[in-house]
Length: 358
Image 1 (cartoon, rainbow, N blue to C red):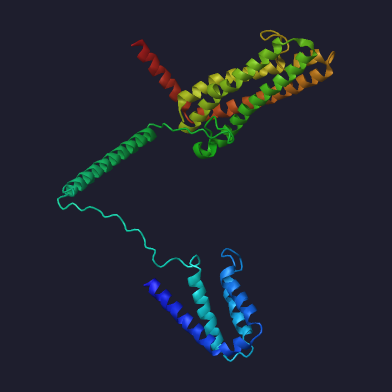
Image 2 (spheres, helix red, strand yellow):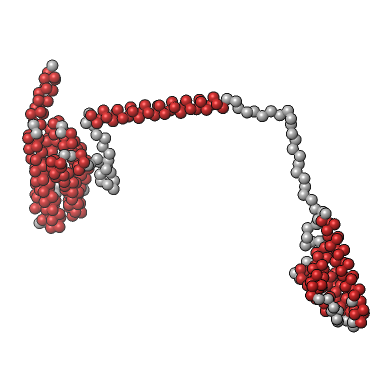
């Protein structure tokens, strides 16, 4: 079909060209430049290479040559444009590289074999599978509900027993202990608890400064033994203070337990005794100047004034810690007696003695 259209187009173009050439034969013969123009025309049509950049403009040159070759052009602009279009169509047929050939065909797709005897497996038990999955989902849901109810019963039992799950929340940048006075301690006991917490932090400050003072004494020639003892006081004193007396007081205030109050009194009395002993720092039990007290400070002021000042500052810290600790134990004991916990602890002690005797 494409080849027929192309040949028809070529025939129409050649007929028009022959008609125009017949009409202008006389003029062309009289023209002195006809031979030169005709040679130049054939050079443009056949002589130029096909791969040059000016190939697509060759029909325009041909059209210009046809117009200029005739000394008396008798065609109007419509015939001239029509001639140009036909010449351009003929040129496209002359240059087959610019238009794809009409005889090209796509390769046919390979035939697929159809097997009439082939069987297609369609599962017929899909309904059974859906029912089985639905039953499985219901069983899992029931199991989850049962576990949720069991967990809820355990939480309620723990709450009735007075057991509180303690999440570590202090200090905020590195939580290592549970501490929430505002939400867990009764309002009338919060002041005492805050002051007790201040004495715990004060113990941390006192033992830290003790390390600084003893380090300066070691630098001045007092020996490394006192420095190692100061490190031992800090490592054992701060965690020991929290476990032995601050946490029992915190739980006693929260649960109002008589036994926890009793344990706090024993441990806190030992804490007060240590602070008073460190403030004086006699060379009786602890070696030399391992505690920043008043006696080592007086001894060091003569030879090393700076070290003596450091020891005097430590003496002041231990004195303040001792006074605050005495106030805390006094307030806790007053609450303990006023709430009837003393009589309760006596009854509990008597009951345990009788049970042990039996």
